Length: 262
Ligand SMILES: Cc1cc2nc3c(=O)[nH]c(=O)nc-3n(C[C@H](O)[C@H](O)[C@H](O)COP(=O)(O)OP(=O)(O)OC[C@H]3O[C@@H](n4cnc5c(N)ncnc54)[C@H](O)[C@@H]3O)c2cc1C
Image (cartoon, rainbow, N blue to C red):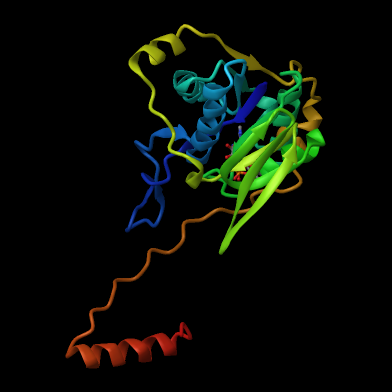
């Protein structure tokens, strides 16, 4: 059984703050982390490996050379190999070009049974890359996987999260599954596994390695372009209501009605 996990290094958006005076993002000192949903994706792969010892897990990422730190974290959690797709030609990619490059990288891994990814990356926030990679590889995709119910050789049964319930879906392998945080609790690295992770090589592939022409990746192959990006206005101060509970409740309802919230 061969599993591939798509992992993205992202800025920890919990640490990004807005400068209240300039209204700009404060990026200084913001650490880069493994995208949280991708940690759940890796944990799902590791749990299959715990039960089926003949499993190998490859983690793949597209990003700048510094993404190797995140990939070492994945190795320390228990992945067997890590591949970084890194090339100036991949830069400026929208989700369309990102998925082309990731799919090309996965093809270089040979036959893969399951590809796990996160539902969404906390920086780009589009939730498009997983389904697009699956489409490019011509395999089925199940998004929002919240539980792996059963795995039997050539099929996997999963729960797919909905707003008010779930769907039970059985899907043939090979397939792409995008994971949500409810799926599991990602494990911690051990000191020994961190040391071992630094002994492993991380393969770095450029566009030639994954057989992509520069015109088919990165900005050149991105149908969308970020025209402008800006920081949303800082929210105004809250308003304290005064008076008895009854008066405050009445005023609150009036204000909510004025804003058409109720
Ligand atoms: C014109 C344009 C230019 C851009 N330029 C840049 C740029 O220069 N640099 C930049 O960093 N971003 C750039 N972006 C943003 C970039 O498109 C997205 O970061 C990227 O396509 C992934 O989309 P997402 O973050 O919404 O991921 P989602 O679709 O929300 O991610 C879902 C899942 O897909 C997988 N995944 C997503 N991205 C990767 C990845 N890179 N490697 C491995 N797995 C992944 C993960 O499992 C993730 O959980 C640009 C976007 C546009 C439109």
